[in-house]
Image (cartoon, rainbow, N blue to C red; front, side):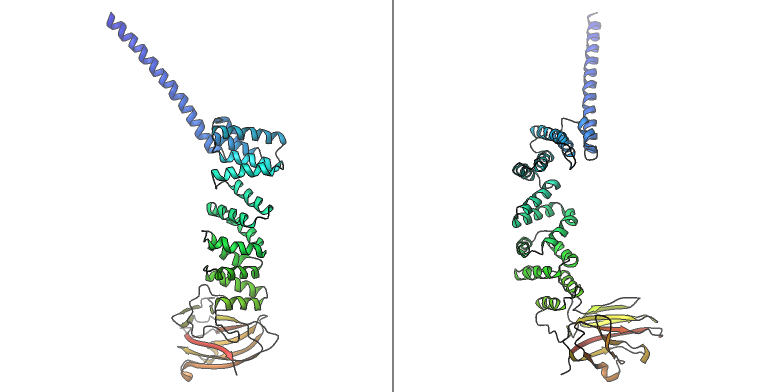
Length: 405
């Protein structure tokens, strides 16, 4: 009987333990499930997430910031402050809660308090977008150029995706010489976003002269500027009708060039990408072109023609001689390539036929007369369509346009 009673007591005890464990497991499972759900929906439905997990400081902070939109009522902002402060009491590292307090203080006109809260939020994390954008705006409002650029640097380092928002603003501000000067110091520290910004600004900016000044300052400071940026500025200045400025900048990049002559007579330069003032191979309609090892090589299929090579010129009025040497050109008269010099409006100044390479050992020459009303010219090599099965092929290893006397 004693053994039977003992077994009964142990059986009841075991069941009590099992029920207690089951109850604990159920409670823990419930909180774990609701917390997981709250984390998932915190960004899309912060109010519901807060109802599921009001004990979590970060979720509370997310709910608080959702009540602080531009059209929030005073009551909403007061509630947001209350939630944010409660979140910070639970967890002093709740960045969103600190940003909420800063945002509400700013909207109420309390800049000093807003600055304290956002400075604290930035110390916690530099990845909060609201905080970083506010810090930039605050520095700009205080005319603190170094401070603003420091905040730009911080933001673009940790949030590269914001470049689409911040680059255009920085490019616009770059028209101010003070900002350009400070930007040289910032870019001189070689931030990871620096080269990307320079290349973007060189092609997308609305003020190529400011960009030319910036790149010139960067080079003088010993900072390497990419060929893409140099080409972007030259091309933008030409497109804006500022040919003299384009040449001045180009000459600073390519010391020793002469405005009265074409550049790179022996196709020795390997510039990628080239600017309009460099030799620029053109591929269109199946024509294949390229510059390599001191040779311009081209191939045009049968019945295909078009421009194959060009270089913009800024020749002063006068008479100029084109000389060069070809290899491998063998075509009937009507299918041989030719060089032409055109004004920017498309008017052709003159045309020089290229003989077959067996004539005069491949050497050719001709003369162009540049009028005063044509300050910018384009030297173009054009392929005529050929009926030959092999099409048109050949090479040039020397071409130069220079004063005739």
